Length: 122
Image (tube, rainbow, N blue to C red; front, side):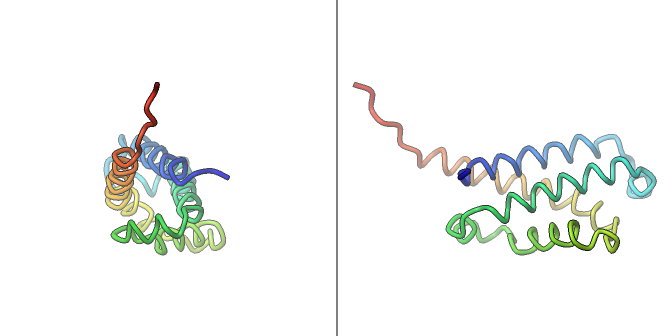
């Protein structure tokens, strides 16, 4: 069984990938015209949602500022209702929500690191 830390690191990696994918896109209309980048961003958003579903309930409840249910719901729509995806929402999510989520997840990882006590070496 994978740890919460690994799922959080998956979220960070997917968020970083999304930022690289959209870095050269100038505006939403360019995103709408680029099917390859749309697919790549959507796949990384699915990774984020899948990682979120696998986080422990304890971690999700302790990080309540993050709207985990919305992240999971977005993943479910992307996977199960692909033909009803609103690409404008995907764009806004990639541009605005993903960087915020990445920062929040990095804070959680930093807190986990701060609370991790290394055993003394004798």
